[in-house]
Amino acid sequence: MLKPRIAIVVAEFNEDITSSLLQGALTTLAQQQVPIKSSSIFHVPGAVELPIAAQRCAMSGQYDVVIVFGAVIKGETDHYDYVAQSVTHGCQQVAIKHNVPVIFGVLTTPTRIQALDRVGGSRGHHGADAALTALKTWHALQDIQARCEV
Image (cartoon, helix red, strand yellow):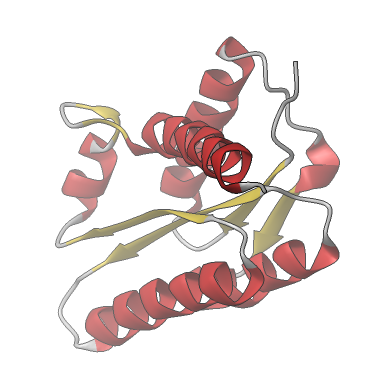
C-alpha cells in the first residue's frame, strides 16, 4: 500500500514544546505504519523560518506533505501577532504555490501553560492531531486526483 512521503520541520525556539509536538507526530505516524526517517526531519531556529524550510521541502519533489511545528507564545509584546500572522501566511503560500500540503502544527497561545496543555495535557496533543491531518489530507488529495483523471 502506498504511503505518503512526509517531511517535518521543527522550530527550535520553545524547544520543550516543539520537541513534544514532534514526538506526538512521530508516535502517531508510527501507529499508522508511516515511518519517518530522521533525514526527513529538519530543524530551524524559530517559527519565522518555518515557511522557507517548508518551501525547500516542497520544491525538492521528495515529499507529498510537509508538517511544520512551532510554538509562538504571546507574552507582553506585539511581536506575537506579527510572527503568528507571518508564519500562517507563509505556510499557506508555500502549499498553494507548490501544490504540497503544509500542515500547520504551530501553537499560538497566550501563555506557556496553554501551550503545554496542547502537547499531551488537558487539551489533547496537537502534534498527534497534525500527523492525522497530514494523513487525511494526503488521502483526500489522492482521492481527488483519482476521480478527476481523464
